[in-house]
Length: 120
Image (cartoon, rainbow, N blue to C red; front, side, top):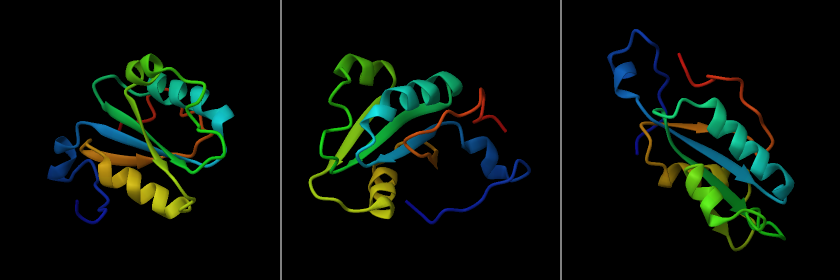
């Protein structure tokens, strides 16, 4: 992956950015994970959402402890878990390094994006 570069609608790269990977770093915020995943999934156009990547930064209780694998699959969500705390920047980097979408977006573990937030 290359360096982050801002892209404006007039840029020829704009049309190449079809899918999003949403990276969500979390540390001991398990109570926010379900509503955040649901909010991101529901507010993002289906054809634009490649995946949601939860990065569990060694939470005492796994952030996905109360989520079924079916829920994760249904919401296009996968999980990376650090065995020891690495911090916010490392969590974002590790999530971004595994992202498969054309563009990567980083959101906090306790957000509710507006409807169609991902549209230009």
